[in-house]
Length: 128
Image (tube, rainbow, N blue to C red; front, side, top):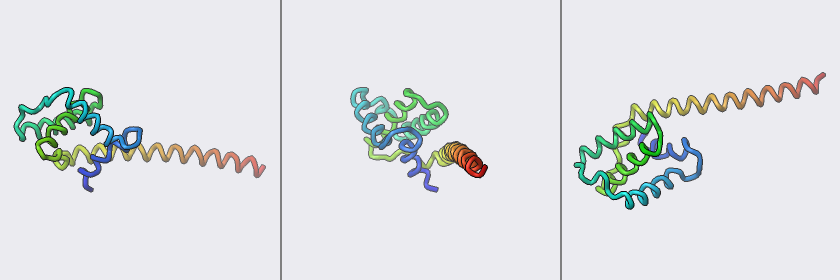
């Protein structure tokens, strides 16, 4: 599976709202201008390492501070003409998607069981 593409789309799936990834990118870029280029002093290798660390932190503990760091690092990479190194995160992203899919499947199974129970209850009432 191409985790790079999946990670780019994940914001729209994992968080409520339509076009969340695009909105996050616009917010990040607009906010980045007011904050300045916090990571301009890093060389390309340091920037990449910091982005990977920020994504790992964000995957472990989502919050506004971790999102802000990740957004600013992503913006700095793109200003330099690079895409974030999504491929370097394959193992972590695979684990996150597995957990996310497992939770989604459990939610669907629970909803299905509820509907099935209601249907069987109605059917039993009609038969008796």
